[in-house]
Amino acid sequence: MAQHERTMFQRLSTGQKRRLLLARALVHQPQALILDEPANGLDMGASLGMLKLLRTFCGPEHSMIITTHHIDEIIPEIERVVLLDRGAIVADGPKREVLDSASLSRLYQTELRISEQDGWYRCWHA
Image (cartoon, rainbow, N blue to C red):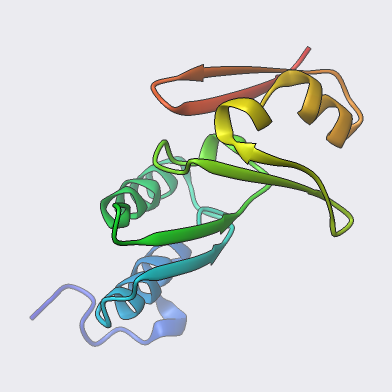
């Protein structure tokens, strides 16, 4: 018997619940996923595990939309980024062009610096 096979959903950790819900969605072999802040509320290990799982879904036959406030959660496979401010599109295009210091500083009204390594982006206060 699996470790959590008989555990009630409410008693699972946030990370376990997220993995279970993702597995439930993937069992139907969807062509697209829409995820709202999939790593929100997870500790670092669970967050990295979730992002790793999402990367396995990506490919030419699948689409994924992720909403997030954290650019470090945008997996390398995501190619297009849309920045929103109160529901209005302020930038839309290839990730490399949209995720830059000027665009994000303007959006968040604070001086930010952005770096990229192997398709992963990081932000910090300038």
